[in-house]
Amino acid sequence: MAERETPLFLQGMASKILRNNFYRRDDVLEICRDLIGKVICTRFDGMYTSGRIVEAEAYAGITDRASHAWGGRYTARTKTMYEAGGITYVYLCYGIHHLFNVVTNKTGVPHAILIRALEPLEGLPLMLQRTGKKPGDTKVTSGPGNLTRALGITTSHNGVALIKGEIELYDDGYTVSDQLVAAVPRVGVDYAGEDALLPYRYYLKGNPWVSALQQTR
DNA sequence: CGACCGATCGTCT
DNA sequence: GACGATCGGTCGA
Image 1: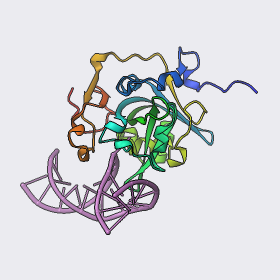
Image 2: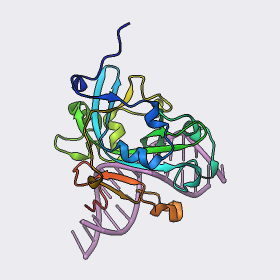
Image 3: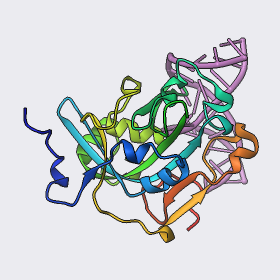
Image 4: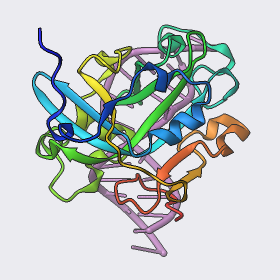
């Protein structure tokens, strides 16, 4: 069988799929920052979409009160995070929203990164159809719940490896200087006490697709 | 604008 | 039985 095809827009570019050596590093903050500017592609039932990551949050495992794995919680839901990096962690939030995370680090260390916003690259009409949004609405891929709806990701994709063709991340050579990356507290984690103040939310400064709230500069 | 609220259901206590 | 790593609508200033 022929090698799996490269996404159309990446052909001819100096692009490469992110492999396990990218995800299985120790520093979840470093990986989170590195994800800013990378490309997510999904292909479900022949329907293809892609977008560039402009916002993400790190969840630093058992010592992080904001993480589902805080204190070493190991349940049917959180066990995915304890697997080796390079897979998804997708869970249902508020009974409505499917939130997409990338699992990092090695087996037994439940680190994860929540992808919060994308700049659409390909398949925007399909994203608009999936979300019921109108052309020009930047909320189509802004916010973790909106983003998964646009990409077609649901909890049925929990635990899927990020190199199998359904959900993949790429480095297409687009570079993001440190000057353009902001690090601020995470959204919606007031329950986490002082850990709610940690600057674990990274975003591309000035990018219109970044989800609302304190777009400092 | 900002504050508030309902939706909706899996997960954990 | 309570509570979300959210969103979009409404209401009032």
